[in-house]
Image 1 (tube, rainbow, N blue to C red):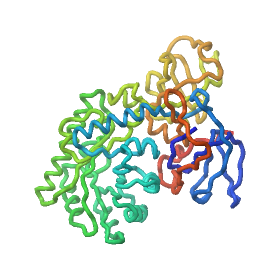
Image 2: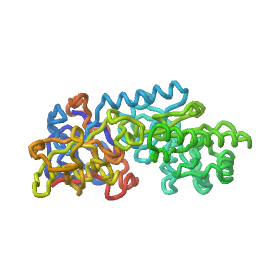
Image 3: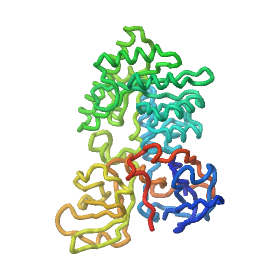
Image 4: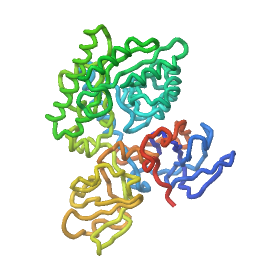
Length: 452
């Protein structure tokens, strides 16, 4: 079987299901998960890079035979979603710089970039280092520059031909000045602009925005690359018309700001906007942008379908779970999917609770604890005969980004058959930075649980 290579502190292997602790040659205890071919290193320091266990091969051919909960990815839909987005912006003459934060895998990145291994966006330095270590270049770290990570940004800037950072304050710019790059290199800097989007960035209409842009352009050792805006408010849209209104406003304000820069002698900055909704329904004026940076579209999710970015048929991911309990006195099923397999995103506001239960619009996932989910009928009495103990349910997640980060292994399939690979091949993972160290998620969501 094959799993997408994930940039976390987990190594993917082909192996049996282990249930005990073992030791490395250095005596480091490593807890092993109840997953086929996967073990967890508690931190990057617990084992040297490149040290792996060898496990016997275990073949599971079909997703219906997987141990649950399991995160499954439909490769055909992933390829279709990526192809549509690439074609859309090639026709507009705009560079697509896909965001990696949804999937965090080499395989999806290769599909999204059309195999170029260039021009991507990341939201953590764990992601940046992971992709850089595996041959990617032209990486934009789209996060307001954290002062404690300037040195790591410098190392990536010196290693790669193009590593971009994002600033939205003069203080951040001063931090870059205090750390000049070696070999005569310049920092590649984008300025984050808030175009009434309610996210990070300098408000586009304030004089401070123009002042900061001028300061960046005049700073020695810095190359002012462009203006970066994120259409975060597109997530409040309902339907294509509202999505396009947000895309138009963000595009207009971004392009107007670039013209203001040209008027004061700042020439050549690129312009980039993004969000999956806005890039799923682009407006004609987006053809005047330099780049766009959507990310979720490679998987899509229930949230995107409600916004109007996609159809449910475009959602490429599921969490598989099994029925483990019948409770007629509560009119309830128990399943082995808790919030550590799905996340609490969406708050259970869907008519079907925390997820869409594929093929069963009459039941809902009403609540979850860490390892369990409770399923009840939308109305009336539950027919338990439809859901025997051990039977499988397929959950479409509300937010694919939040669900994917819960899983160390993605099971990739085509028409229900797991994609094959050569057994025993080494994992392409370098756990240089742990999730918790890089603040990938809140501490409660750092890693999936260890089942006992």
